[in-house]
Amino acid sequence: MNDNRPEKAASRDKKFSVLSRKRLVIAVLIAVLAAVFAGVFVYAGTYSRVYPNTYIGSTKVSGLTYDKLKEIIDNDSDAIKIPDKLTFELNDDSISISSEEISLEPDTDKTAALAMGSRAGKGIFKRAITYFGSLFGKSKINPEFKYDEEKLCKIISDFAEKYETPPVDASYEINGNELTIIKGHGGKAVDMDAMYSKLQKSLLSGNNPAIKLSLVDAEGEELNLDKFYEEITSPAADAYYTRLEDGSIAVVPERPQIKVSKDAIKKALDSDKERVTLTVKTSPAQIKKADLESKMFCGTMGSWTSYFTASNKERSANVALSASKINGKVLLPGETFSYDNTVGPRTTQNGFKYAGVYINNKVEQGIGGGICQTSSTLYSAVLYANLEIVSRTSHSLPVSYMPAGQDATISEGYIDFKFRNNTNYPVKIDAHVNGGSITCNIIGTPVSGQKVVINNTTTAVYEPKIEVVTDASIPVGYKKTVTGSKGSAVSSTRTVYQNGTVVKTEKLTRSVYNSTPTTVTVNPDDKDKPIDSLTEYSAEAFAPAPQQQEMENAPAESPSEPSSEEAEKSEENFTEV
Image 1 (tube, rainbow, N blue to C red):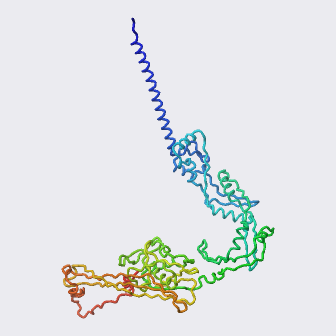
Image 2 (cartoon, rainbow, N blue to C red):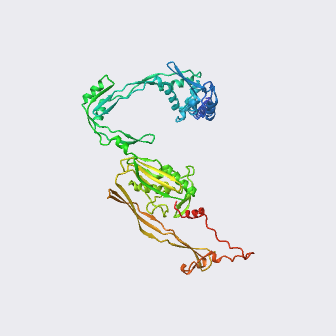
Image 3 (cartoon, one colour):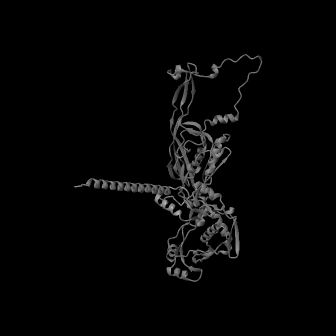
């Protein structure tokens, strides 16, 4: 018997081997294709240049980097054309405006963002789809432009003013017992939204056609019956002060209460007449506009003057600069003034100079030295104006230009002088420097018969401590003493009199002034000896004998008196700044 099973098995193994190899090749091809596709997809999704087939005007910008694209937008006239002038027409009239006049130029950033496909916020998948889509179609980018809209709007408004009819808002007037209702009417105005749209199209056209302006209805504000009736019949409103956008102060007029039927108001609003006058009953307001205007800034409420050495140029400049920054500041009733915020950062860029300041109970050079004299002078003026003190701190050491208890120190962002206008009228700061003096006035509405008295009482005295230091140049058995200054605590009160009668007594913030130590310098060998046993050192006593003069009859040289300027500088070393 012929058995061929081994041959059949071998044939099957051979066929299986061929099939396996085919499957392997296919798997490898699929993996390669997948890797290629993934690579292309990642490339497309992370592509950082302008997409293919992208144009701005007639300029192809495909493949450009962001920086190169911005350069093309700014400089290629084929990509974006800026006309020399723009022409606007209204009715039979026209006006031409130069591009320079309104600062017309390409909006580089917005146009570049459009050309880059506005990729911010898109994921890699969407960016890849956008990239592949750009391969099959041309993309034309409409450039964006920027210009001075405020200036263009004013030019157009001035040009079209003679063709416009301003709308009149509905309003009302009260004259005694007569209520006049002005119903108002609409008007005509240039359609600015349409103008901006036509301007964009004109710029994109490339040939800069004239921009035709159009007039649209401009409606005036109508009176709502319910709201209007509720307003005029509500309780009378007093006149009051308000601050305008430019910072100036104005008085809002009073409004009386009107007593009239709602039907009468409805009949007036339904009338064909533009102005309708009704006879009504009124209840007047208590505070009138004329009264507030007559009392505003009518006198000086408080004033103080302090003095400084004008020859110290840097410190004097700081006093004058800080005075100019607070001068003219107005507070409405209830508002609070901050000296620190008003004067602003003390930097050389802001005009402040280096001068003496108190640092750790010592006088050292610092930026803005002298502005505390302004705040202290203002504090005293505010005290006598009987305004509310919100925050005030005394100096660490006494100052020579102000009574103890009436100074106010400042430390930027840390210590501030604040006061509040607790009156019913505006107050204004008047601060000015004249030579070697600074005066602060509080201008407002003085109270007739009022008098303010400030009392400063020293409640404690602090003797200076003694500090012993060594110096080998001092002879043994001697000492050199530099006397310090005493410190003190001061209690202050403000008493207000009205026609001679005390109406208020208030305790002000306590003032504490530190002492400065007395320094005793001794030889190192004497550091453990009682200082009272040492003799006061005099440099003249240990000076070498003068050499014999060639001329025995030569007159002896007498010491010269210090100049007035030197005397002032010597005194300034002890002046608080």
